[in-house]
Length: 145
Figure 1 (cartoon, rainbow, N blue to C red):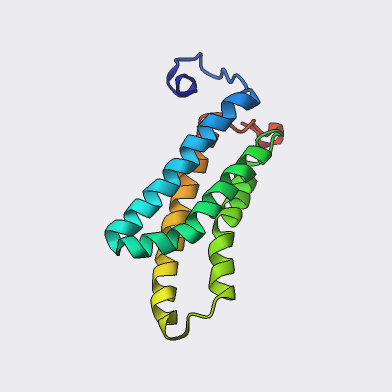
Figure 2 (cartoon, rainbow, N blue to C red):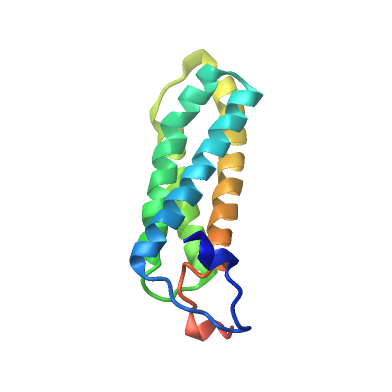
């Protein structure tokens, strides 16, 4: 799998990824994004805060990976893939923010959730762009390049 990123190829050569090769690439990529976000949350705040962040980040990362895998079978615009994966990734945090009454802790939640959302969105965008650049997603023939 990693050899596909590092193997020298002729300019313009784009061998398609078979679907079994996409799975480990996405697991490592989105799993790494989850671990990175939770580690940064742990360093910024506390272990308890990282534990609470995991309630939204882990399902969001898993959902983003499943969404990316589902979108990798047919050629689509890279921007469409990026937006769809980002929406799926941030959905659990939005559901938690709208469904739980935090009472007096609402300002703390709002501050930390906005930082967490920005950090997680950046990680998901980075990982999805890396996978798209590596050729995991088939090229859209109407995109020109």
